[in-house]
Length: 299
Length: 299
Image 1 (spheres, rainbow over the protein chains, first blue to last red):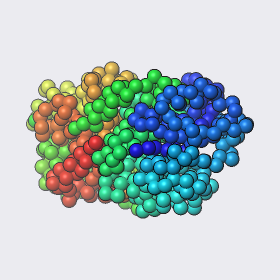
Image 2 (image 1 turned 180 degrees about the vertical axis):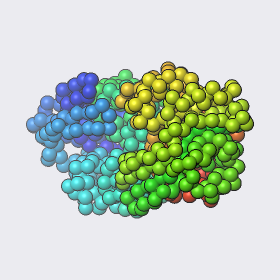
Image 3 (image 1 turned 180 degrees about the horizontal axis):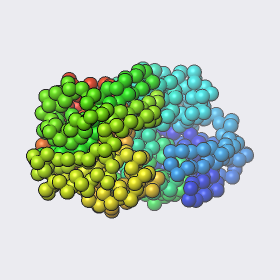
Image 4 (image 1 turned 30 degrees about the horizontal axis):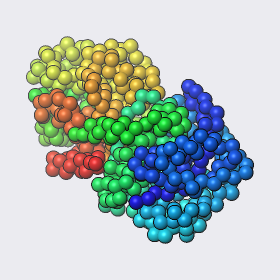
């Protein structure tokens, strides 16, 4: 199969209670593609400025990520600055400079157009249509969204729910979008809007996957030192979709395993700043932690 | 084996966003004993006033709960009033009238003194010593505590941790007591204070059980309608300890199953106000939900 990811490649400035990093490489597309690269050979669509490091482009290539869909434009790369509290789930956006991302019009190279799995990582929901018009007949379309689009373009988000198979979101976003304080009711309401799967990510509390005829719950791997939570959600989606692309079967059993692989990859992402942990991560470590998850929940 | 529970029998006035109930029967000992009664024949120690309904005493008896340790004193029964927000984890105490519970000096009838499992439900930690002096050689001693004791008698709570095997607490209480924002680090710190198990209850997010050489994580059963969260934690402990008392084996495998039974029983407790759901609950329903938990986490 093949997986195409449409998302951001960015610089992040991150402050945690213990440390600070200026303009390190981040972005939903970057995290998602790197996470997926441990399972398959993802293709990425995104835009960066002339200031984006060549060595990062090389790094993505060395992870067998197809970057033909990444265009380099005159101008600066998207820059996000955020701050985390003692509770890593508490995040404050200090600053967002969209820069070249402001005019992002995703263009899929011809070799991307037969994608089996398409992932629309929290981009403007009004960009979904033009992207979908460029792909032939994907088996699976997934989207994520962020509070910004839910608050500013709720109608567009609901419209897009009607044409995706999987909706990934934080538990807070699921509740906000559904207008319901109860996550289970909210997840079921969104299922009725179109997707066959709602994947509610709950950070340190794990994830709940709502299907039309099953619910799957998974705790997060107990973690003593969250160094940098940035990109955990995008890494989750990358591991999830990368695994499905690899096994090429979208059954309830494989969806459950995909969610565990998503959690596993996310549990590595938060162990270091930015994408650093992915630079040394091995498939062996991923498999070992998958087995650890089995022991974590076994009874 | 035999299980002795020392806790409160009380009246609760409960307000939720949808409803209100005045002076219904509650109390940590009541919830815990009823929950445990689906697995074993628990013995309860507590105190009530003359106003406590005789039919509740009869009800406990009809559930094969030994109430020889419940004394009826002149005066009024402990009364707690609380209010829940839209998020059932948000609880505000409106009023606490200790009444006869203020002078509670637990006295164990002779037939209770050979208890195998002893549960000290969030009573004053300074009462633990006198209780322990009355039992011969329990195989397992467990305690719960509440924010009030952690804030007002932290030294006593730590001292008591040194002589129990299991510490049950909410995740917030585990973090508060350990002085650590990270639940995993906090749980491990408390393990070093004496108990061989720390059971951190996380409400709608499930529970984490920390042992000296394992961690067990379980999501909560997805619930669309939390009618009244009161007593969920006490019911969890009751199901947990009642199951261990029944199987009479305290192995890591049985501890994991005990935590699931605790979650199962708690998931019923919140389906109606006060203890009402326990009045119709059957062992068959408990077993069915235990199997449902297997499907919930299976991958």
